[in-house]
Amino acid sequence: MSTAAVGFCIVGMGMGLARGRELLKTAGAKLVSVVDIDAERANKAASELGCKAHTSTREAFKDPSVDFVLVMTPSGLHAPIAIEALEAGKHVISTKPMEVSLEKCDAMIAAAKKAGKMLGVDFQERYTPATQQIKYAIDNGLLGKPILAEARLKWFRSQEYYDKGGWRGTWKMDGGGSLANQSVHLIDLLTWIMGRPSRVIGRTYTLNHRIETEDLGMAMLEYPNGAVGSILGTTTVPKGDWWGLEIHGSKGAVVAFLGKEYQWRFLDGLDDRKEKLKTLFPHRNIFEDAVSALRNGTPLACPAGEGRRSVELLTTIYASSRDGGKAITLNA
Image 1 (cartoon, rainbow, N blue to C red):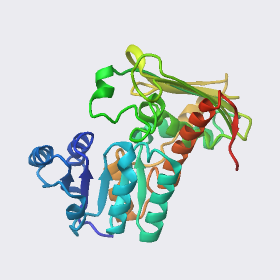
Image 2 (image 1 turned 30 degrees about the vertical axis):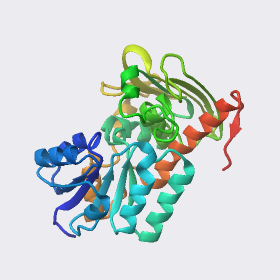
Image 3 (image 1 turned 180 degrees about the vertical axis):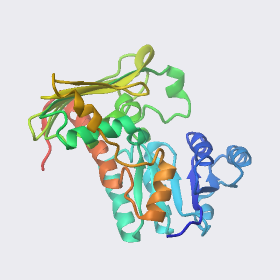
């Protein structure tokens, strides 16, 4: 087992700057370089983070000290950058969502398989211990038979937010609106905890912004085990900052306000089940995860196949909405 620092290159210094700051706090990780097409922004970030600056991914990916590439660009650019990095012999982590279409996700997966490299998606809520406990509870029957799963996000985004950069709220680069960008963390948690739905009904609306995509989306889900689910995601709520999950079973339930203490409820006589909850892995961010994967061979928290699932659900919701809310059955 190697103890050498795992080298990272971060592409995209808009969203990627904060990730770079987080990386510097991670034991066993080293930031080798950053890339941005804006030279001034790349140099400024590199100066702060103490690493090399590049405006060309080709040059950055030639560096043999780079083990992982973290892609933090607009969603519609994830595939070409990820594929280039994989072909250069690097492992890759993409920010959420994995891409804007299943075809692009599949191209990334094929490139990773051909290169024999790891490909994952950075869904940060998977690293929350309390969220891991929900999955453990469902997988081990602590809540009984799954009955209902709800995901709700009520946030606010201004028109200026969508106008800045010119890519947010577009199909080509954002892949959608309030569901694809903001709510995708919850959608990932639903697919992780509850599994793949068998039937989906979706409706989307653009009610308060001048954008191509939705600022309010809703979906009803049916699961193979008989459970049902719902999704609500909007960026129209003034001063909105609420997001979370509710998972109900025949023996218990959990209300998960993300960022706050979760509320567990069990039938009388079953309260000791809360003491049986367990976390699934010790990693607390994508960098700890990647370091462990390379050093110890542990699986990534969200490998590419699971990252694809949230894109599949998103595209199904949008397809249903375009067809007037017609139910779509997902093949097994």
